[in-house]
Length: 87
Image 1 (cartoon, rainbow, N blue to C red):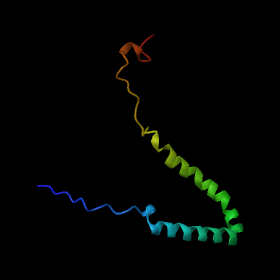
Image 2 (spheres, helix red, strand yellow):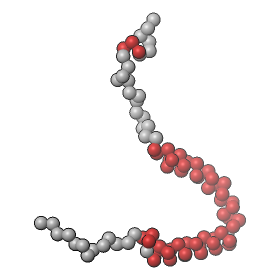
Image 3 (cartoon, rainbow, N blue to C red):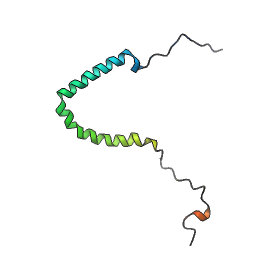
Image 4 (cartoon, rainbow, N blue to C red):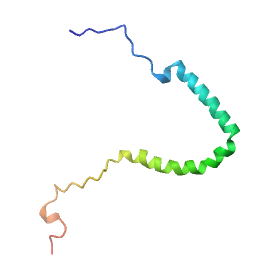
């Protein structure tokens, strides 16, 4: 016999909790001070970040192609359609 517990709710997700708001505020303040106090270091790192973005884009954005080394399907070709059979 299965009993259903109707009074139990799933716990709230992290991004909808008050801890997430606190985290975002602290992260925003930290980002502001990092950028204002270390702007020269941040600008100096931009060319390296651009070079880092290129391989990351290829890894994460080309994942949907699903090629994975599959050979083309040749079951629909007849013997006369294959190259090299005709003189």
